[in-house]
Image (tube, rainbow, N blue to C red; front, side, top):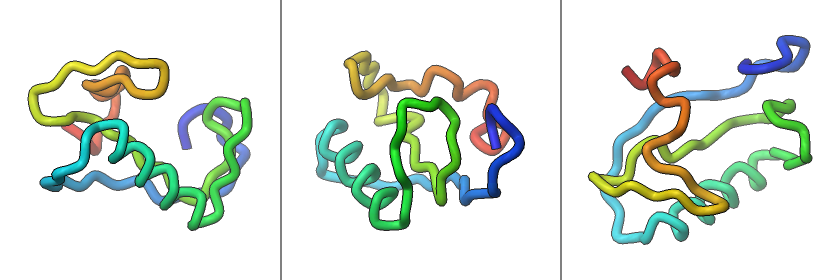
Length: 82
């Protein structure tokens, strides 16, 4: 886990996909999947979770909204993404 190490392991993987969804719609879907898999969102950053779904890239788009930053702000430090 990133952040505090005294928490259960969780699934963190990378996938590439094609979608007709807009970026915010894709974010809504990924967050819904996280909730369905038992994730409880709290104010705590890097808190315990069952899985973590991040949008690292969205084509060549650059997105910077309150809910979504693409490319992912910490992508270069995520070994599984390189």
